[in-house]
Image 1: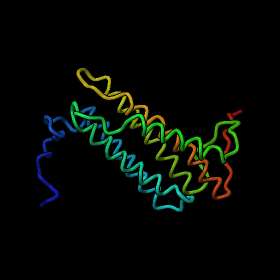
Image 2: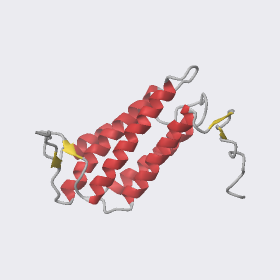
Image 3: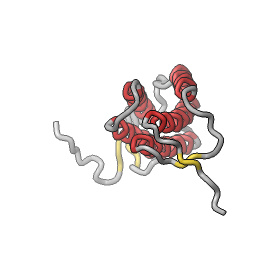
Length: 180
């Protein structure tokens, strides 16, 4: 099977079980940004990670594939990401945050190479969340609220994991100080 089909050469692509749409359609932007997030997590996984975090990121990558498939399907018959996925992320946030010093200020997205890469993934996650919110506002488009909740919670987890990666590397968070 060839990787190229030439069917997208006119700027359109096909949705799962649905019509062809322009490649800049809100649906394509949404699942394309989820795919970008997934790729950024692949970059993060290539870096040294604290114990257990690689398996967590691999699971999240699989969940993001499920979300991408759901977003690429107009009016899917089933939700691929559910409340249980969000609850798992919440437990993980609590688990990793328990090992960190409490935040007393904003921190810059910096520190170890691993933490910095996780911060990039976090910002891509926030963009994916915004794209899904935009898609959900399209007429006659149904996006389960849990998809937005999942991305919101994943962004929170990525922030905590960036701090956790810094702590594991004995690299302090870089506090933000307002310009004087």
